[in-house]
Length: 246
Image (cartoon, rainbow, N blue to C red; front, side, top):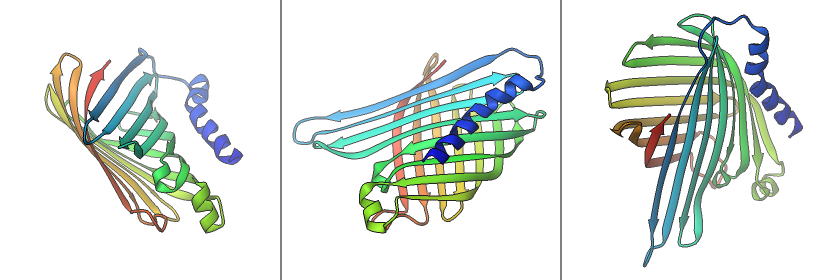
């Protein structure tokens, strides 16, 4: 536990430490973000509720492009919690030029329905922007990483150990296409391959309603080729949220 916390702290502090000692390209500091919220509530013969929230913030600071991401999902059906997931991530990209950069990233996820108390991943490597035009963006990243997963009490007692960890190969692909000034399609794919293969795909369409307010439809697929014995390999999540850009 102390080891993963130390690694996470180093990864999250690295962009700011490097910022203090590096020679930056002169430019304005910029900061932007998107906040999402979606909820459903039914009462009567059926009582269900669900809440999905997301905060995505982007910062350009000299040669650095930084991203800060928070997500939360909660679902309840007739008083029973059926889904609960919390996710936090941070990534810093140091730009060598318009196309090439190095990245350093770390994320932490809590999802008790997978049989783990939490999962943490850190990685660093090389990224390249293949397309960066006005209406289309495509980038890919690859590098080594480390994953740590803490089993919950039930799984720990069943398996006889309380954690799993391994060195992984980390890869990510990010694609955006703007259909018009008011709508766009985004596709994100992230994979970590070590003792097992774990991947996450998010496909989304966003359409502006008025001003900075938009509607977002997203399909998220999570995959693990070696789930715990009583768990499924694939989790899917489909949601509609309101998005506010600032």
